[in-house]
Every structure is written in structure tokens, then in C-alpha cells.
Amino acid sequence: MNRTQALRALIEGNRRHARGAHHHPHQDADRIAFLVSGQSPWAAVLGCSDSRVPPEIVFDQGLGDLFVVRTAGHVCDATVLASLGYAVRHLQVPLVVVLGHTGCGAVRAAIAHRPDEPEDCLCAAIRPAIEGARLCAGDLCDQTVRLHVEGMVAYLRQALSGPEGPGVVGAVYHLDSGRVEFLTPGDLTPRSGLPG
Image (cartoon, rainbow, N blue to C red; front, side):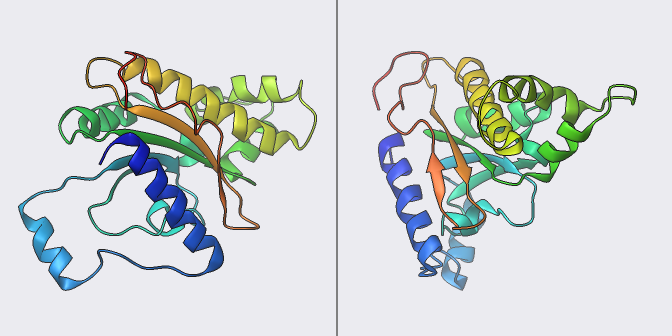
């Protein structure tokens, strides 16, 4: 599966999720037995740890389909980058999705952080997006989520670039509708400029 096909599969899976028409693919005993010998996921997702946004469910995928890394606020540190790098280099994943979501608690906590209190690594990672969002109209939390997703996409496009570089796209899951809004669906060209 190439990156365009992978993106299409995610979009179609999310449409099923939003309608409540899940196929629940690749979740039977045969699939479990098949995966004993190895894995070949066709997309990686850097998502938020929020219990309301499990990527396998919101994209209606099954065992072995997605390589998922989750942190509060979809923050990318050295371990996360190494994990995504493993998926790209060793598993040949062609697509990486950075998945934020509306109403993110980690983002709200970073916004509420007081300057006189010690700043943890999550707040420090999200702060640039907060500063940018303060210049935008609309809900501060949701604008911060969008800018933070875009920042992670830009970072991963550079960090994972090279001859085998994947397509990297950003997306926001809307808690109220169950729909994923892709922020950069048309740009699947990795930094190296290779075609899909």
C-alpha cells in the first residue's frame, strides 16, 4: 500500500466510524494467528493519549494495520521520534499521521499553566503553539491543537526525511462528530521529494 492508498483507507475508515458503521476488520482469530510471524502496518499514527481518541477505532482498523504511538497532547520527544523512525525504516510504513483532537486536556492544562510554576516537558512542547494561537480568532484550545499538529508535522517531515521518507500529514479528530479533519491531505510528498 502506498501513502495515497493508506490515506484513502484512513479517510474511509473514519467515515464508517462517524456513521457508527464500523467494519471491525482484522480482529478475528485468523488475524491473530497470521500476525504471530510479524507485522507490516501501512500507516503510523502519533496521537494523543486521550481515552476518547483511540486511532484503531476512529479509523476503523484492526490488528496489525496501524503502528500507533500516543502521548498526552501528541508531543513528540526523542523516544517517540525513535519509535516512528523504527516504523518508517524497519517496517516501511509509507504514511505518518499526527492526530490531535478538539477539547484536548493536555493542551488545556498547558494553556492554564502559570508562569510562576515549574514547567513540565508537555507544557514546554505545547507553548509555541499556544503563543501562535493567541494571535488567531476562535477557541484558544482548538486553535492551539491545530497549530501544535502543524508544528509536529513540520518537525516530522524534516526528521523522517530521506530516500525512504514517508508522507506526513496532520489531522484533528472532532469529539462532537467523530470525524477526522485532515489539515494537509493534498501534500503527501516527503521532504526528499519522492513521489507517492
